[in-house]
Amino acid sequence: MKSISELSDMAGRVTLITGAAGYIGRAVSEAVAELGSNLILLDIDAGGLQKLSSQLSDKYGVNVEFLELDLADEHAIAEVPEFISDTMGRLDVLINNAAYVGTSDVSGWVTQFEEQSVGTWKQAMDVNLTSAFALSQSCVKLLRSSGNGAIINIGSIYGVYGPDLSLYEGTSMGNPAAYSVSKGGLLQLTRWLATVLGPDVRVNTLSPGGVYRSQPEKFCERYILRTPLARMANEEDFKGAVAFLASDMSSYVTGQNIMVDGGWGVW
Ligand SMILES: NC(=O)c1ccc[n+]([C@@H]2O[C@H](COP(=O)([O-])OP(=O)(O)OC[C@H]3O[C@@H](n4cnc5c(N)ncnc54)[C@H](O)[C@@H]3O)[C@@H](O)[C@H]2O)c1
Image 1 (cartoon, rainbow, N blue to C red):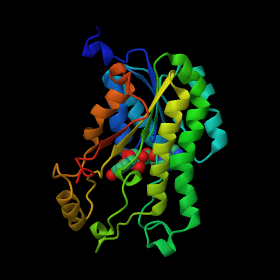
Image 2: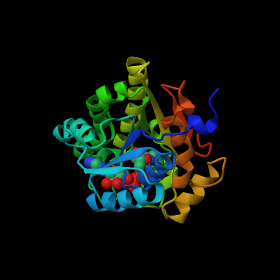
Image 3: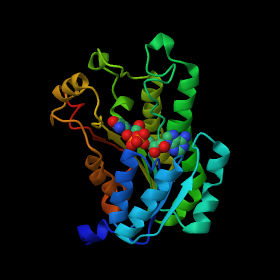
């Protein structure tokens, strides 16, 4: 029987992480690098990628390649497998983590329902959902031939639950329908792919709760009151679940959604 350290060992494997230059992307990349996986870091933010890739190769001694790419561009996504084959020659794990999260000053995004625009809706769908479909599809041949293929989709509590708008009262924060719906779509994509790609590739979702990023105090207080573990998340909170889902620790787990939300949804 394999030990836990053998099951979690990802030495020689290759993990592609989208949105790697973001807050959660960096933590997720660290987690799999620490287990020995080589990395392909993908993001639209070239500077962030460059910095992270040298940090991780220095710290963990793994091979790291990075790819600056706009996930809203389906033609660019179609070229990703060639990049993987030319650089690493294999792919074991794909983590669809990038998302269009907008900001409160983007018109038609964080606003009341009547004013949310089709333009921002489409942008969110393109990056959050369509790119996960297209990238999974373009990488499926490589993932199938891995022998340990896995896809992890990064969802959200808002892919599972409706928003409680009273949390945002008196702040410039909000909860666009498109964000929630794109994350709900990822959950169904996970289930669909899990049945279709098994037994070659496992497919799971990790759904984070809200991460503390200096949001207004009023919001944080209300959020924490609703959270059994009585705090907002930090990026480190997701490392364990990613390590589990990416490695052979979860070799009999597919089609699942792991809520890493401090118990937000258990009331
Ligand atoms: N922060 C939270 O509270 C929270 C809560 C639940 C779920 N999530 C999810 O976690 C994931 C990571 O979020 P984060 O908080 O690290 O956000 P972030 O904004 O720090 O990171 C997102 C990354 O995606 C990249 N990206 C955006 N659009 C892109 C595109 N078109 N092409 C390529 N890259 C693109 C950005 O450059 C950025 O580096 C997202 O899927 C998000 O929806 C976050």
